[in-house]
Length: 122
Image (cartoon, rainbow, N blue to C red; front, side, top):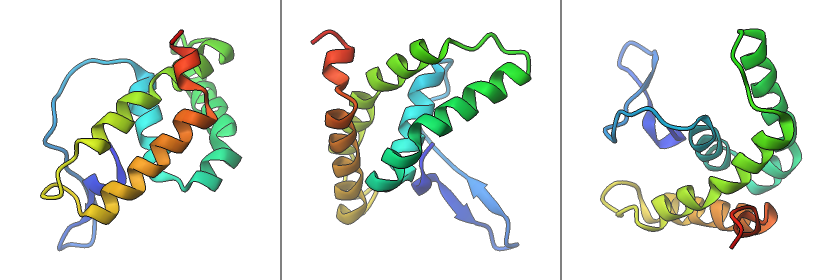
């Protein structure tokens, strides 16, 4: 999910629509993709660790066997390239050029900030 999937219905309610795939995947892919696409670079830098800690805390409070903080941070760093590739190959027919360019820049910056390739052992 990303902000481009949300819209206001004619009744005024906020709705989510995404025609991608339905599958069971890792939590870190969705968390990473949404966080980086939703926040400006400065906001992400300022809040990502707190947001990750809050997410993990809410999982634990709900009885979910969440990863440790260190393991979660490593997973978060490892999932940045997915989002970068998704936005690089997003067609202008799907999102405007400006939207695509904004998200490519956000993910490319996060890739460098979080040293994602090092987290992947590359």
